Image 1 (cartoon, one colour):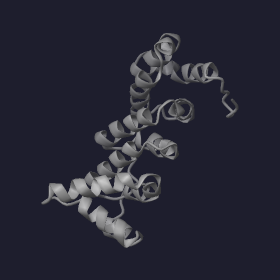
Image 2 (cartoon, helix red, strand yellow):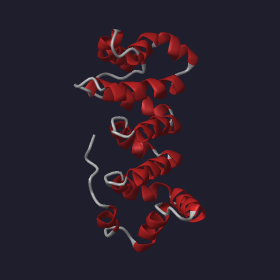
Image 3 (tube, rainbow, N blue to C red):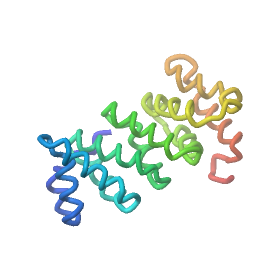
Image 4 (tube, helix red, strand yellow):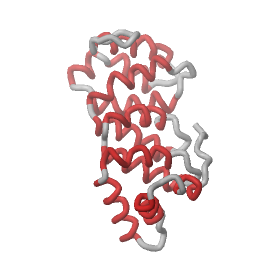
Length: 184
């Protein structure tokens, strides 16, 4: 996933002045206090800051992208599920980890969209499977971990039984009362 290529200044021109200032403070290398204060203020804005954070994920500044993803993780809003699913395949390990943690923080509402993402993944993305495994380990109940053990093993064992992951994801969707066409 290398669609992040826009210059930060170019993106910030589209932002309201108060948010652009906070984002500039968030990038501050000389003042940790200023950076932490900006992060806290952005987190307190909650859902209304999410569209701006989504745009920052397209920047060429990896540190800012990581911070944006962390703020989204903190906010843990359901509307971020599709963004986190996309970020599970990011080129940056830290962002992939934050995306998986974001899905966990959102909670069980992430399970079905994550299963659907696995089914829709025609390329067999290693990173998606790894992130899904991490999230499911934290989201599934103990009983579900036993029932869906084959899915967890398939996600974890990329080179071996990983070939069955689509079938196992489909079985898991059925176990959660959903079908492949979105019913439930």
